[in-house]
Length: 425
Image (tube, rainbow, N blue to C red):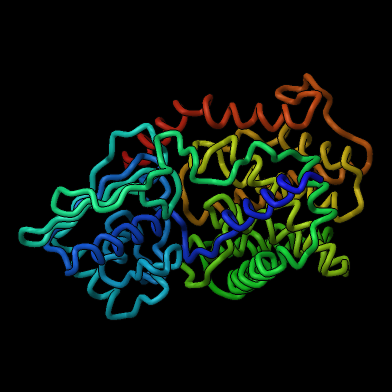
């Protein structure tokens, strides 16, 4: 494998496998608020949040982490203002206290903060304005959850991200070298000492919240219910149950971090937990597990690069497709069988919409994992959908690109309508 591409893959993993506490859209707001308060130098007298429709969608119904079950845009902003530490980035609310929660609740009942819909073509975009006496600060975040593109204080630009622009070029390592075959070769050959810390943290964090989700009382307890009824296929059931439980705990405000993928904790969960559970249930060596996780993570990143961070397309599809293909990899499947697993999944469940972050995301993860596991079984038995079956193409890269095109371009109107419906209630 070309050394430049090899090193590129390692940098991509470092950029995308990042710990986060709670759903990343509320966290983006909390981070902006904490940073703005830090720049202002005091607690503000007034706060105004402007955010894109996709952020509204992904904050409206999900619990803000460590905030006593509070949900919504204003709660996310206030949590960041009151108890956030900007230096902690995606774990900005890790140090919230009961006293902070009381303060947030009191401020929610006042006219302290205002929320507006931001007119923007960028799906992940927010502006946070703080005012105190004659001082005012604006923090702008675009494209990724902690990518501050600009900070203004008293009308003067005091920080601007020179690499940032409306197409988000230059802020990430080049992704054009990502291919299924390249990912397969990388997973087979990379010296694990170069990536083991990243993968070990993902295993530790994501399985920890899965166990918490199974033991605690979160949402409708989907993970525990699946385990109770799924005795006929224990491995398939555990894969779904553990991943769903982790998601449900996270969506319900659990104070445990996860290692994200492509800016999403749920995608990090669906990418990793099925691979971990499968490897452990089959007593596979640690090296094989690590290589399977490398494959799964990079495949999710590859798919999401074409789709984008936020869209009307449910990220559980991409992440579950990746973990299903990684299970084929773990079982010793050929590259052709891995490609068939991917195509089988994308022939089945590419149309699931994203209607925001909330506890029922766990059910979507379980459904997508059921589809991807079936796709794995079919591929290992020589069964796969041929080119021309709907969006399936001859080349797996073309199939992945077709799904990216549907999600990024074709579902824009769908996204707008979903946001309108959500704002009605």
